Image (cartoon, rainbow, N blue to C red; front, side, top):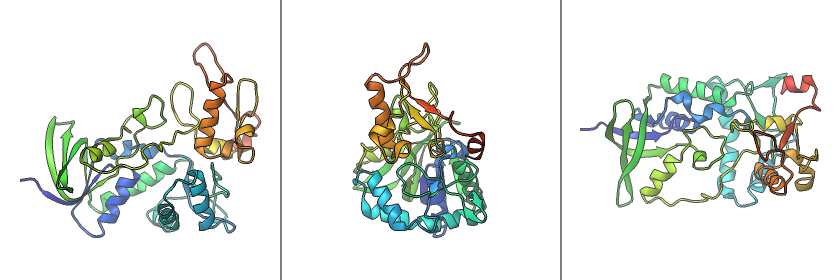
Length: 313
């Protein structure tokens, strides 16, 4: 007979670990199941920062407005309000468990990222994802929450619209097992690797969405996939948005700073979808750079920035 689990979380990235810690307040029978070891989660690679109102002239209403505007006014505004209104307390929680956000004279050192009216992206030595993951992982272990690693979830166990658990395959022992649970939370991350180009890690394959769909769940807004505008040519290794926040320019093959055409006010710090679309437009119009190894790319230039700016950022 399989052991029954009160709350079973699928995925061990930031969302999965945070969900497990919150659930553990209400039950001592919480488990995490993950297809990879915890610290191989794609969350570890996050570098741009986590947004929160942190300067006196900023406000929650401005944060909400920027988020809705950045979605081309298609975002669920109630969901945006809930998200934004919880950011301050979540920052305080992360600090309470040991996440050290960058500060200057005891004030947060916030960066201005794409689509934001004010500087509100908090970081931790440019390794915000790693820092959060390390502290959450420590808390999960301290709270004796069991993590079942190297289990690839195949499907949910369900009947008449009710979920009773899941079926998973263990890659170490080549076996399939059923896990029964009152509550299953899917926190499996993105699905970047269903596309030919992505800055997501290779384990981001959309498993959670697929198993939910096969179980009959209704999916929403599947067309809204964000592609990061900048990466190293030929590798899909992400170049953090902090590069453009520091003042890096985007140039086409003619040396034109083309974002002046597409977003004359925000330029390289326009929302990511606008920057990505602008890059593709330039390439499709024949203004991409080419060389003997790679075709069609755009230049991200730091040459005008001083050493002090580059070292600081």
